[in-house]
Length: 238
Ligand SMILES: *Cc1c(COP(=O)(O)O)cnc(C)c1O
Image (cartoon, rainbow, N blue to C red; front, side, top):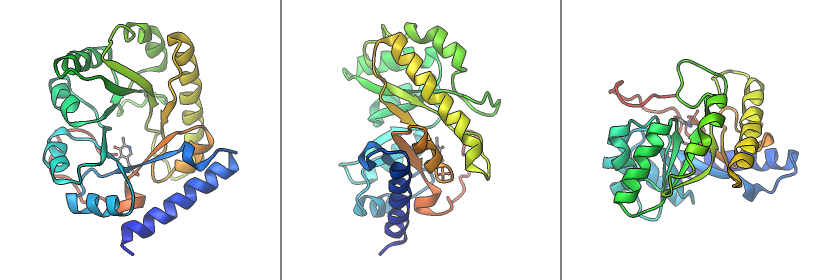
């Protein structure tokens, strides 16, 4: 067995146990392999182990990497997207998670229209109000939400967040809970279900699942420590 296969088995059992504790079927949680900073060979190993959903947080890296990976995979952009890269994002990715402003949503609408496609998105919320993180302030999102409705090329599938880093995963619980509550309010306002809650990473995926995560984004626990990236200009590493 490759290390990725072994790690995957461990992660799947963590997901199953968290689902069992919260009375949820294990199929209600999708596992994303966060392959940022990992070469295509590692993606291929994860794909061989059965994973199909991958996340990248830098456009430049994804542009080179995705064409070198197996073609049946689903790719989500999970980083901070600058408007001038919206075209590439709409071109390369099945889903853009981390849409964090009205201006970016409008630019994605424009690019999706040009490419004659509809683009599923998740809205990123900075629940804890950390200055180091991107994402909507919750109140602001509620205020601007209805301005997203006319963007006909965008399908809002739900919300995503990155919890503040802590050694103690319980510290993330209120953040995940608030994201779920905010999702419920947004769904009411929009009159749409917003089924996806993208929250939880290697260290806190159990707590996220207990609070309703439908998609967990896992890098380190699957691939091991990430090789460091040279270019600090683009995207942010968490
Ligand atoms: C890097 C990253 C992850 C994965 O983090 P790990 O702690 O390595 O599992 C998840 N989500 C986002 C947005 C990331 O940038």
